Length: 121
Image (cartoon, rainbow, N blue to C red; front, top):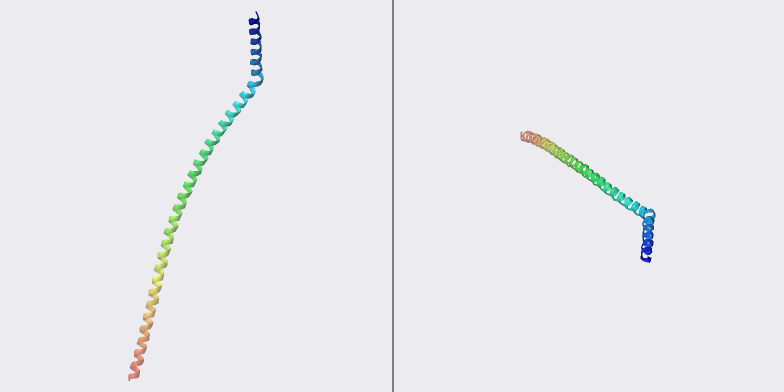
């Protein structure tokens, strides 16, 4: 009889412990687990969003770099054209100056020849 009474008492205490645990211990544990799962889900969503933003930023950077390369190539070509124009203008001016110097030298030589002929007469 004492084994049955002890067993019954242990059974009552066990059910009281189960009820106490289900009422007071399990809800905070379940809530903490749910909050942790939500934080993990939020973190994963934020990581996915950051990855998408990084991809978008990389695409924008590539587009800007491509545009910069195109602009740089265009500016270099324009600078080369201007340099060639300046060189051609300088050559033309130098040729004109050379022709003027030659013409002046010829005129001066002609004048000296005329003076020399006059002095011989």
